[in-house]
Image (tube, rainbow, N blue to C red; front, side, top):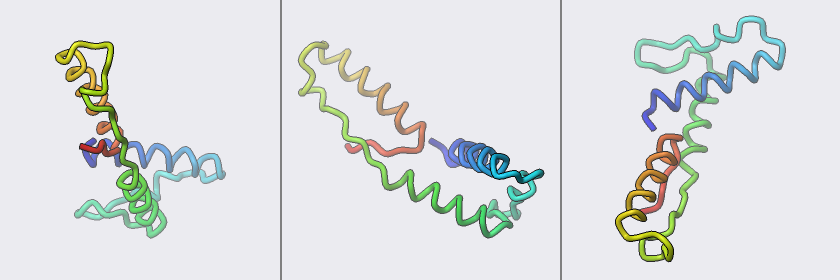
Amino acid sequence: MGSNEMRKQFEAALLEHLRAEGYERPEMLLGRRSNGEYISPGARSGWWAWQASREAVVIDLPSVEENGTLTRGVAIGVLGVVRSNIEAQGLKVAP
């Protein structure tokens, strides 16, 4: 996942949380400097933690050889799609 998509997910989750906590204008905490860094220390720390949590997750997929029901070509295609979808969520797939 690109950092932009991951940032959108982070901001949506943060806004949802802050609204649930009763903040009336939580979007004010999402202001950023020209370098993309959040102005709010809380948002900046939250963004760091969000990224670190995604970095810590690595998913092991079965190898093509471990597949017993699909043809090799289909298995390669399916695993490629699965890998892409996992990575699109900002998670890593073990090689």
